[in-house]
Image (cartoon, rainbow, N blue to C red; front, side):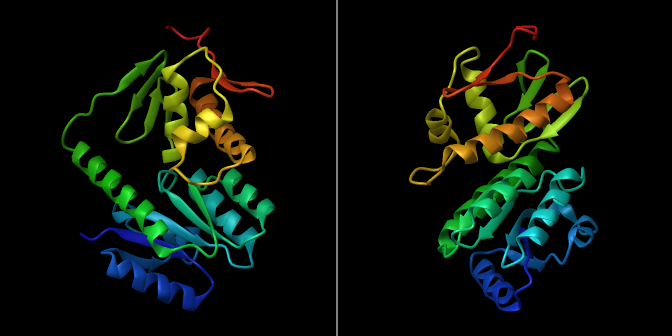
Length: 236
């Protein structure tokens, strides 16, 4: 079945244009009127949610937050289109859990390249339902590289692609402080402008997810320097 991209937008013209662009690239599109509509849909065929913030950043932020806090939809990648010169709105969306934000105008090919990556990831996850996948142990954590699922005895957390890349990089060198520049180079595509505040918000989201399932904090902030994974309380 063709991969489905859900579009949350109040602009009919944008929805029609984006639906056409997606169709020419081999994707199906569906209008996501609100969170309840998404939650009641067949989530198994949805590879991403595209959010057009338009003039109502508050509505978009609430919609994204609802998606990321529901166990049914938390795993869905969210791409948000944001109007230029709206830094505060961008930060609010990051805090709400979006996986990537694009400042308009943005070329359709950039959006499609992200969706293709999500499509490949969704294919991998479908294959894993019928074949076991090895996971990497780290102290109390079990980390599945293909599904981006982090589990421990207390629960599990589905990480976004950026959060997962950040965690993996930090775990490669436990005890070593990594600068924000190091993390940007690892977690974001080349030639993609990312400021320090964006890194901080993604790390904060990652830290909350890990704190919830571990019951303790393993990512520490080193003021003016960056971040480090503290494993002193783990088994390794």
